[in-house]
Length: 208
Image 1 (tube, rainbow, N blue to C red):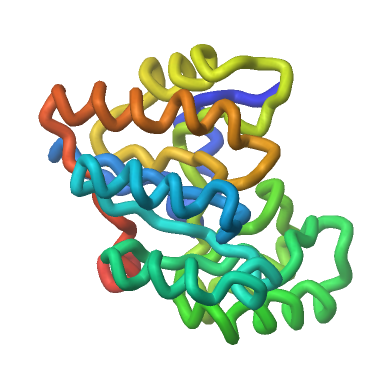
Image 2 (spheres, rainbow, N blue to C red; image 1 turned 30 degrees about the vertical axis):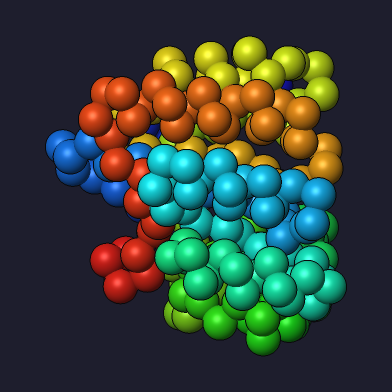
């Protein structure tokens, strides 16, 4: 069970975390977790380019090490990169020092101030340590593309009904999400482009 839109009450309890980008402008922040991989990420980049859309990719360090050319393409095409740990560790199941070393190992490839914890799993101690160096970025709209029990149409619906100006939307450029993100992403871009939205990458400086 998961909520496609993070309730305001939940966001108010965790003010140190970035959930969205407040404002009245029609800006939308698409984010992609778990890449880069050759099977999905280049297609995502091609699809974004069709709409002159910029996005943010929260990358796994091991995938960056294996696919440096795709990581370089992400940057070259004007998208921003975030740290998603080296090998997708769940924070609450990992000792503090082990977790921080894993994050720093990923940082060798990403070199960013943006961090997103896999599974939204983070202990208080991990959060305090990370906030001295990173902006911890979550989301206020969850597409559900990781959920094998739904189809692409439901994934798209999850996004369309939940987005507000300034929303941060979570997709995945992963094999597990591929079928649903291939359906939902181009339709998301088409829908909100027609409504006058701009698709922006998260700006590290603006979030400080």
